[in-house]
Length: 221
Image 1 (tube, one colour):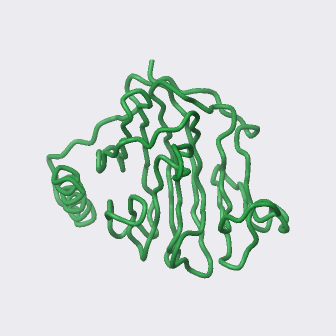
Image 2 (image 1 turned 30 degrees about the vertical axis):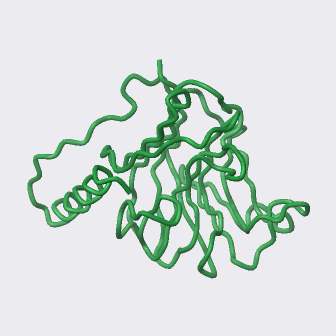
């Protein structure tokens, strides 16, 4: 983890303390979507990947604008031919990309107890990796892959997540509530798309859940 990224994470932590303590803070978050065009989305763009032997409504719901996704550590993969871990994820279909600057925006929520799970990813990479970005939750902390910790104490509160991937510059940026908390290099690959939900990783809890609303896909103008 670079010193700049560490300082951003530390600054974000103290800003959270100030916000939750009703203290005044001079920090002004930015709008990461400025200069981007929001692309049209409908239900057909939200492809739900879930354990192949379980009905969709037993692992996913959409009520009052909130996507709720959950999975059990004992669940099957999303396909009988897959050897991957259990997941219930939204695959944003119709907006695969191989160049340009693209952005995912969504308001996320992770309930207490969910751990050892990826809640958002930029899929696509050069082998042997499969992804350019994974945001995971371990014991209440939001992490970049397994480490470093980006945000401690993420449980039981809504947060706005913006992930920007500049394919040509091979750079990924992660914003929480308008604050840039991490930058990372890309991992190559010929095609990419965004996913969110729950995808079991190492040391996972028995039950994993995340909720999402106000999901947008944007492209730089």
